Structure formats: structure tokens, C-alpha cells
Image (cartoon, rainbow, N blue to C red):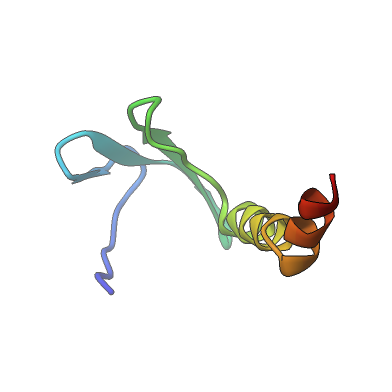
Length: 70
């Protein structure tokens, strides 16, 4: 893991096409701005994990068995 210290207004660039900028720091909270191509999904981790779990459930054996019966 890369750990960086940044100030408000500072940015980091990932892979030439993703920019993450520190917008605001209030106490222990940091607001980030992310500029990325529309083709690259950007999710909060907790949302990503929910999507991943939902996809696993949708692809479960029970779903395939149900579809076979149709």
C-alpha cells in the first residue's frame, strides 16, 4: 500500500486518467474529488462489497437450478 500525505487542493494521478483531489479536511473527515473516465466505475468500498455479494447470490447454484426449470 502506498501511503501519502496531501493538503487541501493537492491531487494524485493514477494511470494517466484518474485524478484524486483532496477537497476538504474537517477533523477526522476528508472529502475527496475523483475525476475518471465514465467507463471506469468508482464506488465507495461498502457499496462495492454489496454489489459483489449481490452478484454472487445471483450467480448461485439455486439461480441456475431455477433457470433450468423454465
